[in-house]
Amino acid sequence: MALTKLLDAEGDNLNLQNTSLDFLLVLAFYIHIGVVPDSLRLQRVTRALAFAPNIATIYTHFHREVKDDLGKCHRGPLHRLREPDRPLELDRIVIEAANSASRSIALLNNSEVAFRIKSPLTYQAFKALRDEGDKNANDIVMAVRGYLQKGHVTFSDDRDEDFMTIQKLGELHLSIMDKIHESLFQPIGFDFIVQGIQSTFVTNTLIPLCKEIENEDWKSIAKEKKRQFDWDRPIIHISKNKTYYLKESMKEAYIIWDEDVYRAIRAILTNVLYADKKINDPDRPSEKATAHLWIKSIPSEEYFILELFNHSSESADTIQKKSKGRNLLHDIGGD
Image 1 (cartoon, rainbow, N blue to C red):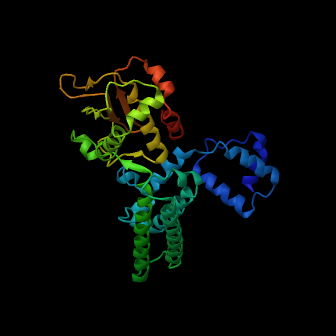
Image 2: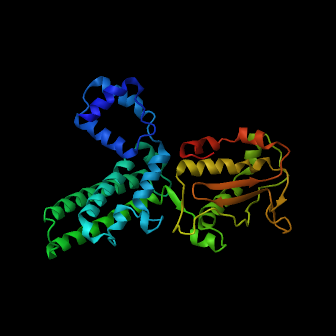
Image 3: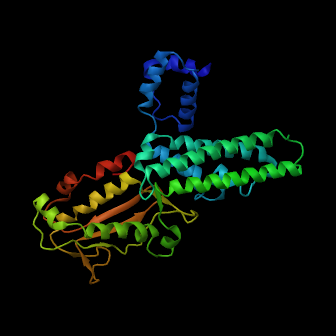
């Protein structure tokens, strides 16, 4: 078959780094059922998979299966079940929905995802949701099979009833996946940002994290880091900057906020220990408020930028080299 010819032709040069995740899922399935039984081919695939899409790619695909945030023209298959925009192509819509449900579960089977789940969702709760989603995806596949067996000529009452069953199963799948999505992503609050109001990500996630850091045992930290402070605990504020780079047509934007990203940002923010005095908001220097560390958040289509401002006798390069959090952001495309 074409797949085995591809593996033979590429030989030891096989590289799947830029290969679509859909192809990798199909390839894994074929290996599982023995279509690629030759041990040499399997070794080549194994080596090539070492360069397969990383956790950022997996997150991107999972997000697109679950969320409908890019407008009507880019709705995912499960979302198109709600209001089919091609009534004469319902067969294709239900097939795509079944494939989407199956893909979302396949993506969650990556072991790294399970260990990056952000609390309060526990590993046990994640596994239970994934298993429930797996069963639901199988139910969708069976319902779609029954729907297609009714024929393509007329849309009889019983066939319409089958479609509504698929719709309900699709809604259930999205609700299950949403619970997992919430432990991996946080919405930035697009509606608030375009109105010039502080984003929900800043209000619900970043500010509580700053308060958590402020309440650390800084005397112990100072002793451990061999630093001298002129303050009991740091003051961290969010700048009132209103800059953003987002398309007005977007319904919402999300930032990856799993356990690793949380720990990385937390570690970076503890660099406040290098501040030697409080400063004014860099965007509003005339205002009276001062802090040891100011954070400017700038959401864009591809990145959520956090700029940190403080006053220190040490250079920014020196402080960056001492920071332990930045390396944790590399595997999701951050820095």
